[in-house]
Image 1 (cartoon, helix red, strand yellow):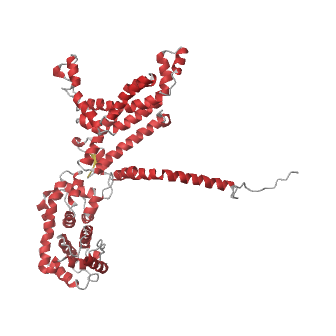
Image 2 (cartoon, one colour):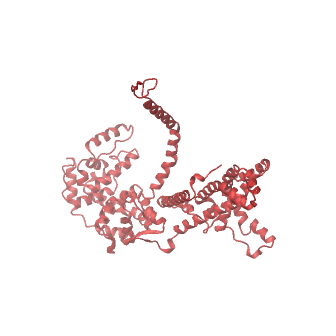
Image 3 (cartoon, one colour):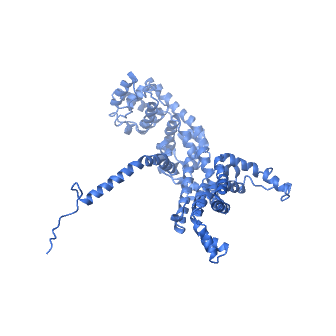
Length: 545
């Protein structure tokens, strides 16, 4: 009987179990491979993925309304847009404080520009009212400084609103001016006793410190006096427990004086600045776009909008994006088809001619890459115009009459011709690289077996060139769908793509949110087509040689 003693698992030379040793070696190899590609991976993430993700986030980001008009947004919570009436006095009071602070920070024009995308005319409303709202604060400033000159000093406001720790640190910094000023810290309990004033001063302190200034020595904003009047009016006997003892009498005297101030109508003041503040549509726009995130950009991108009754279609004269998306898709597909029809025989010639002849023709194919895109597009403008070279030749050949010259520029035909010429090399090169790998003996063998030249081509040669067709078509289509320089120069109003509107909103209208939404939809359409192509044809069948 043989000895079958179990010696345990196999071990490496160092005594470690072989399975564990192999796993550790494999892990080391993976870590080394990761270390080699890590710099490139980080570079791609930082310079490509992160900017795209940030841009796409702008398509739903909408924090500017909430951040610029925080008190107004809260006051509008109970307002019903369906009532058909503008909100009441409390909303205008909140708007007064918010708009004055925004004007000091130069943010009211940015907010107006954002809301103007949804309600044309709002931009001028905010721009003109910034200065008018500041006069409200100046009026209250005169009242408070008339009570006590101490209200003119920044030290008074800093002592009331700043914590003792911050005041001490700020005084030490002001004595030496070394480094950055200490970050402002609010006195405990003040935000509850004087909420509007505390919020305004917090923005004031941050703005001053960002500029390297001392908030306690800076000139107070007029909005402080308006905010303090509202806080004291809403709370006639604010708790003085949170206030420093030195300023408690000052606050108490101001509280008593506010009760005797002449009544002030904020609503009438804003209507006096601009009648637009009485329009329900203005407040409806502010209320609708007050959340931190919005679907408004995507709705605009598909010719929809948010209305009183929910999502609805935009007016007919404003529906342009669906039309542009459809035009971009079919023209890109047609340009891809034109490149395939023209490029296939050229690629076949390059693959089957003698090497010396093929090299000369290949130089002609690559020649456009050595010429500026702008120059090539401008050349087509010269060739295609009604008094251009092509029309002159057609008239000389008597193909067209001089009075009926062809219109081939500033329309879809001009875009198709110019882009087909520009993108043709991107179709020829993948086709050529694949056709070059097809042995010519296959066609001779098919003909020797009785196949006609057409049958040999269609049954033997063409199926082997399909991977090149797929690669060239995907490359041309993706490039065509994102082009905007050539359509802008030769397309006019009828030949522009959706990419032209994206470029317009980024560089001119500065509506980055809508540009990001249009770009996200375009990216989604391309990915959907790519997925469909993969399911029908198979992306594994796409080859570049």
